[in-house]
Image 1: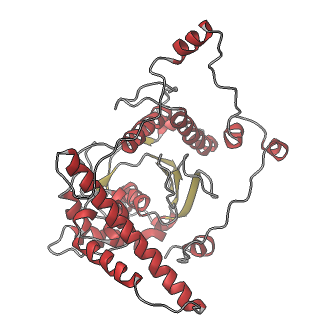
Image 2: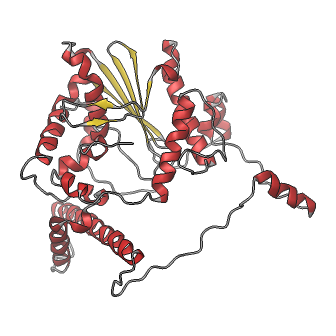
Image 3: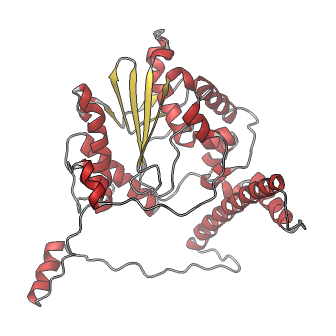
Length: 376
């Protein structure tokens, strides 16, 4: 698949650091990681389901990856939610746009992207999905990638003079493997006019990114930048954080100083981790090409042993020895059971939701804005 140099998936990074766009272009991905291959296969399985074609465990995706139970269950979860959203309108998933390219001229003439799924429920009501198979939690509220998708999908109506204050938008992120208190499917609903400022910010960043002197700025998005190993700005920031860590500080800090230092340290740790992970990837690549990196070597751990033959053959061989090699029967998850038709009131007697452990989280005000106010 051809990607735009201004891909919506890198919008958050471009807004933080316009200089990352051209710097990343100098370091294209040369090989597909196992995680990326799994994600591609999971997306294919989901797209097949939305297109009306069933998939099953053990089926081989076009990229050669074998579909796992997690991939199939994730596709089921995604498909069931789309069906539930469309049912009141008498529509089917096939009536929406499944991974269709969309131009985003409101951001930049060279910008385009491919929403995983988009459908107009009626004129003035847009529904957009983004399917993510990774484990890292992705926030749906004010998500820059989804905002750019919506900007592209709205372009035709806006050019026709349709008032974006009358367009209702719901965007959803589906993450079957990101275990979060908000659940695997999270939604953000808003009026299309609410994201005008966000689109302007994205457009400003995109034009600066391809301009003569784009700025380079460090921040959380450095973590996923392909050029983080070659970024002088990140290197200098990481060195500053190391120097700061050696400074003497009083033990009993007042609340304001405590919050400020904790914020600085957390931000510093993220920059150091981003810098270290970039250098690790660079060192690994050079060692694989035969270079010697003083103090480092490549070790290959033992992979997890797995069956090389079809399940039926393995079970048949086990039966020859009087052994039952099949897994014990396990119920599906409560959420999947409700999706399949189990009355939700039955969960009161059969299931529980334990309270998660306490965790300290950054408060940037976005949660309060999502609950009480508009986005702009």
